Length: 210
Ligand code: AMP
Image 1 (spheres, rainbow, N blue to C red):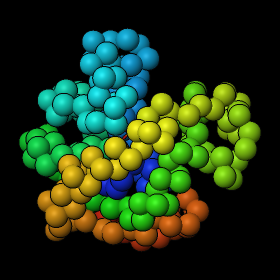
Image 2 (cartoon, rainbow, N blue to C red):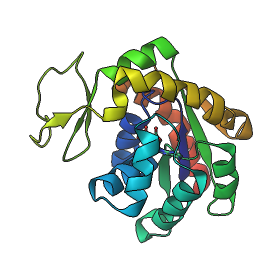
Image 3 (spheres, rainbow, N blue to C red):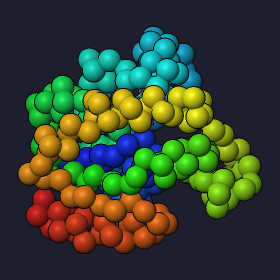
Image 4 (cartoon, rainbow, N blue to C red):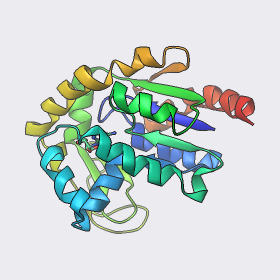
């Protein structure tokens, strides 16, 4: 099952992806995570990407497409994958058509004012990547592995508005691009509520793509 998660930053793509990984045994492929790993390791790609990420802008298509192509060629993606944060432009969507077949697209729908609130309260585990909100979990260490939580630099309020504007202008047109395959998922409520709503679609898709 080859799946895309679409939706604004903070809509809950990463959280939903982690639940799908567990139940459907396919890897989450997050271009944001790959870029952050490159930044941490101070690679040439990381240095270039940081300039864009810090401003809330998109990293150039050719850079991200190359990273994605490499990642999808790895063995664990042979049985399927969940794309989280890719594609983000029509050009990326078109390139993806030459790399893999996409069985389904989930669009996580959430009003912008709730999204803004979710992003600025988001905290991420520095070791396992688990995602928390300060509104429901006020500790500084991960519940799962005990490592410290941190706030992503680009989750600070000054960058968030720009990221949402970039989403509206450059990524939202993909909803039409995938109109024959898109499932609109209500992103409100708890992660468990959202996942329960997604399951029927996912089970159906899994059966069809077997
Ligand atoms: P994310 O973790 O998906 O919110 O991504 C964090 C940042 O990484 C984004 O704001 C972009 O600057 C960059 N990024 C991630 N994925 C892509 C992509 N597919 N195309 C361009 N830039 C990306």
